[in-house]
Every structure is written in structure tokens, then in C-alpha cells.
Length: 458
Image 1 (tube, rainbow, N blue to C red):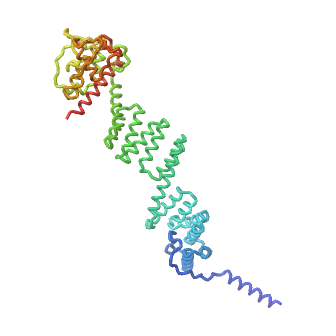
Image 2 (image 1 turned 45 degrees about the horizontal axis):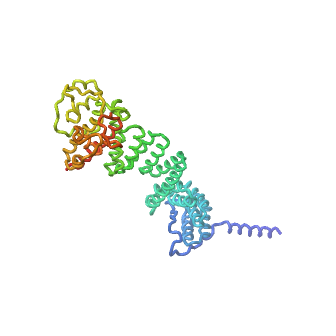
Image 3 (image 1 turned 90 degrees about the vertical axis):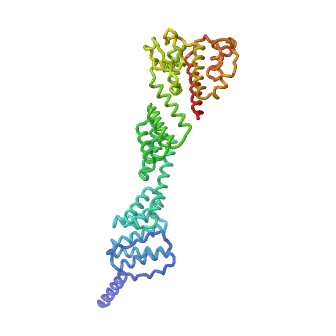
């Protein structure tokens, strides 16, 4: 009875030893076409594992590429059971998870392989693929970038990274723009910050960030972002236009003009040219004395106001006049408009009275404005005679100013050039006082004609 028991125990031990010992290596099929050619072979680093572990690991990979996932999984697991720190097989199981379309399982295996070797490129690439399948593009991109840093020779990985980075950036930009439309500016800023982290040299990202800061009223930050965009692409007029708009909002017309001029130099834009001209006028007006700024709202215009208006707005035309008349004026020194009084009298646009006075405070009447306008028109005609034919040759009928009147020629020319208008009843009313608004409109028309004449000069 004891002998039988001993024999039975021996049989059990032998059976257990047989079951628990190393299994015979399954011979993998010969591959003609790899089932998963995009999977990165989890190569075994030199010196890692035993020859048996390396052989079984290679066989498992062959089974995987043959499409037999169960055989591949069985052999990778057997390798790890025999050699627990053999992390290439852990990466192999990660690729089995990808083949089974189980990205969560795949990530777990790839993570364990990366614990074994943080710079193991095949596991980093596989982890990136699994994270992509889980919709985690940002983390997938980081994993691919780590793989490229660990092994720059991996095929097409750099292109894959560039494409993925572009998709990640576009997703963030789309999310940011939707947030802006909804008025969620902080969410938009976070999305743009993520995009910039992925693509720090993209000027359009800084332009759009600048626009958000501007909408939030933070003009200083908006300007900083816009200037960054301009520094990243010096050929982009949009960044300069944005800088100009921000500087306009900051009441810096000279800075805005410089930015708009830089944009215009890069790309001609009629709207920007009009902005520049408007800002120049704004800047010039801002530098004027308060008496000048009050002209347009004046109920009655004085001679010094008319001299200042003509002298300032028609400065270029006056400077081009070659002939200068020596004048002596005894009462202009105390006027705020002295420089302009001297300018317009020296070219004969306004007269000095025989007693050498200008009488700055005297009211301007419609006859005076017509006379001054006709003299300016004569200066314009001297530069481009053909332009003046319609002003000089036309005869206008006024109910109260016959052709023989001394002021008729001046009134007719001013009306013919569109500088002044007759009253609704057909009269001109020479003695009627001129308002500031009337004078501003008249001089603006003279300025347009002067610019037109200049542009036509060969």
C-alpha cells in the first residue's frame, strides 16, 4: 500500500513538472505579406533577455504579422512569464491590443513597456497610436514627439507628427473661434495658448489672441500679441493693420499712421490709405490751438479763422507757389493765427488793407469767402489750366449779383468750382456773414481740387 502511494506521488510530480516547465516554441508561419505593416517592430536592445526569450519574442511578432492574434498574445505572455523585465514583449502585447481594436488595453501594455525603458521608441509610437484611437490627440502628439526624440530614424514619424500637430492646432483654433463667437473669451484664450504651445511660430495665432485682448479692453496685451505676430512674419500686412487699429484705440494717431503706412508698403489698400489720410488730419487737428478747433462750430467766421483754415488745409498748395509778396502787417502779432495770416497774405490769397492792417477779428462775409476762394482757384489753375476751364468760362445767374458787379467774377468762379452754392432763391447774398461750417466745407472742396490738380501734373 505504501509502494502504491509512493508511485502515485511520483506520477503527480512528474505531471506537474511537465506542465510547469517551458513550453515548446510554436513555429510561426513564413510571412509573405505583413498584416500590420505600420506597427513598429519592438526590437530587442542588445544584451536584454536570454536567447530563448528573444527567439520567442520574435516568433510572437511573426504570429502577429501573420494575423493570428491569439498565438501572438500567447507567445508574448510566455516570454514575459519567463522573463518579467523583458519590456519589448510588453510593447508587443500593446500592438496586439491595437490589432484587437482595444486601445485601453494597448495603452496599459505600452505604459508598462515605457516604465521598463522611458526612451523605448516602439512603445512610445504604439502608445501614441492607442491614444489617438481614444481621441487624446494632445497626449498622442507628445508620445510621438518623445519617440522621435528617442529614435530619429523611425520611418515617416516626422511627417506623422507634423500632420497631427496641424490637426491639433486646427482643433484648438476651431474651439477658440467658437468660444469667441459665444463670448467665452477665457476659454478662447486657453485654446489659443494650447495651439501656440504646439506651434509657437504661427503669426495668425497671435493675431487672433490680440483680437481677443482688444475685445476684452486690454489694449496693452493686444498690442503685445499683434507686435509678436508682426515680428514672426514681417511680410504680413494684416499684423500691421491690427497694430494700427489698436494704436488708434489707444489714441496714438502718429503710431497708428506708422503702422498703416507699413501695411500699405507691403500691400496697397485704398481703405488703409483713407485711414492714413484721416489720421493725419486728426493728428494735425490735435496739434492745433483750441481757437482753430472751434472754427467749425463758430456761428460767425473771423478773418483770422479763415486765414488759419486756408493756411493749414492748403499748406502744400501754398508752399508750391513760387511768387511771394512782401507784406507789412501791423496788427497780426497778437493773433493766435499769425503764422497762417502771414502765409496766405504772402501768396495773395487774402489781402492786407492799405493801412497795413489785417483786422484779424473782422467778420468774413460771403463776398470775402468768394474772393479768397477765387484766388485759391487761380493758384490751382496755374498748375493745371485745363482743370479750370469750367470754373472760368461758365456764367452763373444770381438774383442779386449782376455780371457787372465787382464781386460777380469771384462768386461765379466759386460756384462753378463747387466751392460755394447759391441760396435756394437763386441769390448769392454777398453781405451775408459766413459760418464756420460753411467755411470748412468750402476749404475742403478747395483742398480736393488742389489734390486733384497735383495728381494730374505730369
